[in-house]
Length: 252
Image 1: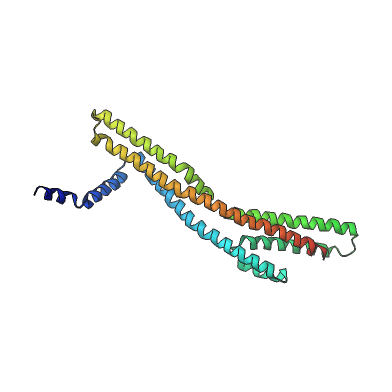
Image 2: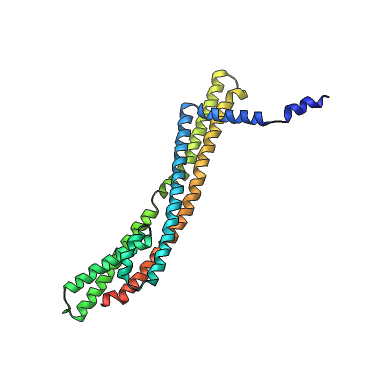
């Protein structure tokens, strides 16, 4: 008969858990001014980093897919002028934009050569050809750097979030512990009721700081590796395009 009250008390721990969760949220929103500011700042970092994570995931995936599609079209194309007319459909392809910049420079070089007429000596033609290839190469490198810069845009914010938010949370932790010691000194007691609010604030700030930093550092490392893959595709295409220009266009 004595066991039934014990079972009734311990059978359903849900109210106790709900009460603990309510206390946790209330501690977070009732934190002292500095700790509350730290929590708001960390939440802002976290929300911003998650928005960037989702956006960069979609952007990099589409850039890789469209670049692969353009490379397939490039190697199947019979005439590059026809391919250039279709390059506008690949505005979201880094490789396509590099090709467009390179082809525009090739056209400029060929127009400059044709305007001089066909009376140059062989040595002059060779010099002009070499200078034309170098001009096209510079245009390709410049376009490649611009496209890689676009892919890396906002990744520095993820790196900043990953490196700074743990220290911001640590600052909130230190401040919460300072509040606990201040309460101990003011009340002259070191009981749990005195130190618990400040320690809870400190732990919440630490947890939120880590919650903001961990996804940011994982996403930053992952996206950097994906940018390197696309950058490698751009470099390989640049080398192939320069070989094509050296063999055909500059000897027209």
